[in-house]
Length: 220
Image (cartoon, rainbow, N blue to C red; front, side, top):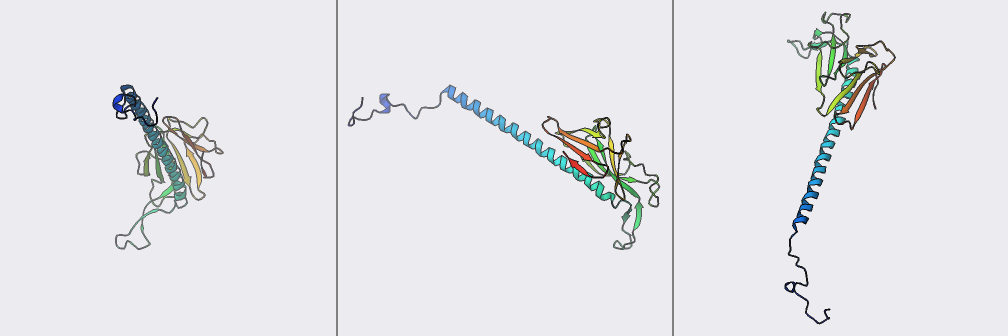
């Protein structure tokens, strides 16, 4: 027992542990293991966060394209025009094509959706009687093409339950003046809605986008 006036034992005497001693091998291994686990969790969390961001971005883009097609359809019978070579600002412009309706082509297999114009092949003077009322693959009807993010998949597109599939390309068409909504291929269920399902590949998040016959677009 050390008395009040006795000298304090030194490190050299071995009675007080040295603070200069390093970690033991076991302590070093424990620190490395914990650091590795925390770093791995951070990477996993970061990857999951990126996938969630990609999901919400894709969902927002698809809904926006559907609303854009509906908006364009209100003006669909106004033909696409080109400026007159003699006077680009002159209002009487030359007609180049007849846009009869606007639509969205959804291709689950190809992993893309296309904003397209339904054109009458008879030309600008046609009354749209010859329009196909769907997307013609390989034609110039495509207005803008969107590729689905690689972390997502379109699991279903069509009229549920029997006609909502992941292996068939389908179309949503908006025809003026209402605009009237139609689906292709249409099984004849005129009172039903069109559904597009988006899902992350890991199955952690899913979205159901519904387009009704009245033209409203809803997300669940």
